[in-house]
Image (cartoon, rainbow, N blue to C red; front, side, top):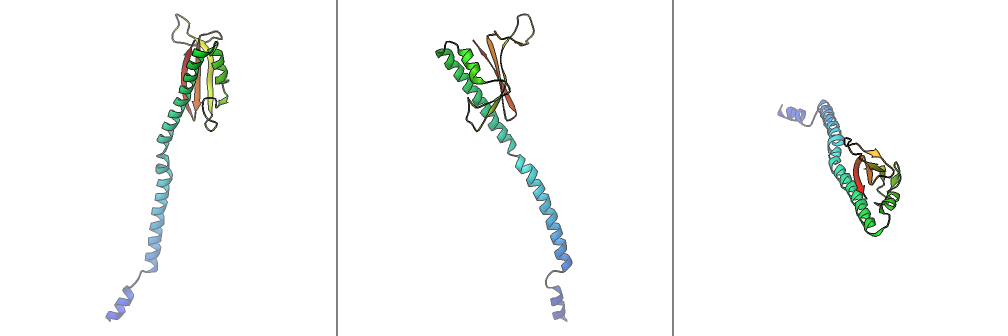
Length: 145
């Protein structure tokens, strides 16, 4: 009688195997869902920080170029405006070709006396407003003559 009982207790039944496969597939689906959202998106802050550093580098390159033009050129503002490019255009003058940036603003402005801090477009103004957009980030700088 002991021999019959041993034979019946060896191995798994078909129901046990099917239930184990179902449980494993549910856990696998949950793991894939977790890996697809949380882990992959954990790199977003690093990418955002890299883009922020890159847009700062673009603006630093512009500032260094303008300072150089002030010390060497007779018309630094005119030359600088031409190098920056037109509003709405993609540029690579202050970066490599693999990282183009867009010019949002490239215009002379003035701040009239007596008004609140409101800029006024002024073709003859002594202040140049430059806004650059790179990967969804924008940075603005003012350059004066």
